[in-house]
Amino acid sequence: MNKKPSSAFLDSNVFIYGRLEDCNSRLIIFLAQLGEFQAFTSELVVEEVERFFRSEVSREAGYLARRFAESLTEVVRRDEINKVMRRLKGKIKDRDLENLAAVRHLNLSHLVSYDNDYVRAKAHEYITPRAFVRLFELEPFKTEY
Amino acid sequence: MLVRLSGTTAEILKELVDQGYFNTKSEALRAGILKLGETYGLLKPASDYWRELGLEVSKSKRKLTHARIAEAIKRLEQET
Image (cartoon, rainbow over all chains, first blue to last red; front, side, top):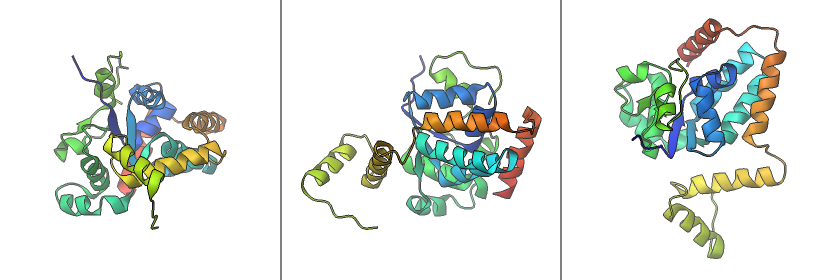
């Protein structure tokens, strides 16, 4: 039997797909809102989520998306993970560096994302939204995200 | 910002970390400040922002198809 995780890191695509489509990312957002697990994210993710909604929807949507991500999760600050980021630099793509450093800093077992770059980076914490939903013994949507 | 604590506040902070509610004291302090913000109406719960964001998206004239979302996410990642 799968063990339900008590915490996880959420990448930007989880917030974006979660708000815009009926999908596994949405189920994950609901699980976090219900307190089924403690959600963490990075400053980079908060910035990306804000930027996405600002450019694709409106300035107000960008602001609301930022506040949503900040109030749902514990945001890992860059100054807390400088050391880990330096250690990982060169081993993975710059874009994934901050998120993976946050995951390693907090010793989290799950980095929830729909991004194959983490597979190439051999990030063993990487899990797709679909697989993560399954850990809660819920019936997932067919899509990976 | 340097914060000096002693007595009850320091003890509670230590317990919050020792009992595993938070990984660090800084993390516990940040969560406490957010809770105060919520109490005094400076910060709304996540569910309010979620709902308001949904309304803002539905007001938008731009149709966000899956292909468009995926493309925008890809662009976002390249910009980072």
